[in-house]
Length: 290
Ligand SMILES: C[S@@+](CC[C@H](N)C(=O)[O-])C[C@H]1O[C@@H](n2cnc3c(N)ncnc32)[C@H](O)[C@@H]1O
Figure 1 (cartoon, helix red, strand yellow):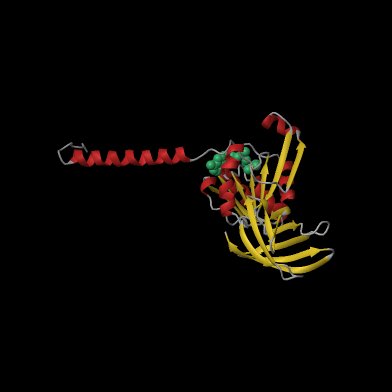
Figure 2: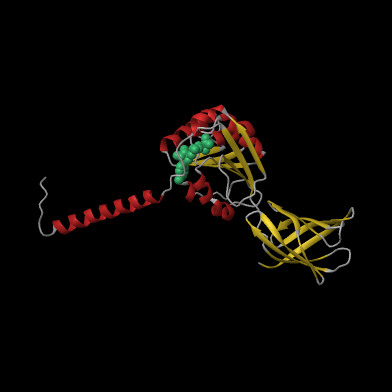
């Protein structure tokens, strides 16, 4: 059939070309937006084993590996520890390879791998999140991790740390296998625990005297500080820490006899104990304002 370019056909044809061009432009823009978080470089098997050990992984965990490569981290978590999870990866052939390995090893009911941009992946289901990505992309994820992950979720990063986060554990060792990957044998595994958000004013009282205790907590990721007002006296709180939903700090009300607080954050309350001079009493605080 010969296509006739009549005065009716030409506008229809031009409109179709315009549609195709627009679609191409959208696709090109989408591809351009996808950030390459790192080339495919598998973590050596011994590092995978250490990452999972540092995470303290178990059968109730749900592991998400961002940029899952051949799937080795999630597959090992399922095979050795009975965990569940998924990996996200942008390279099609690696996703296929990982799903094939899961099927062959009889793990497909517990783990899966999806072709997806890690920056656009919902990670809220994770109890353990792993990554081996470029240092700048690890840091680009910082806000997403704080926003989407639940308090207590463990983050394990191979070689590159999260700026502004205090690691709960850092394991550093030399591994000959790493020389061909990064030119040096140095290997670092960082463990972080996602903190609850506690910045703000909390009101409470001291169990012994029923004196009013007002806390003003400041927080930058998992760096905690602040002040405590006991009656008219104000103190800078000491040794403040937040690990997941566990808050601990000391108030130096009396020299050599500080009040040591420890409590779990439950929504807008903290429930725990206060200890001084070897005596421990129940203690709680309520969020007054953020
Ligand atoms: C260094 S490899 C780590 C592989 C695996 N996690 C491991 O430790 O063995 C990083 C992986 O991230 C993938 N990747 C890079 N950018 C990505 C993105 N935006 N979304 C999903 N995967 C990405 C790469 O294709 C690569 O396979």
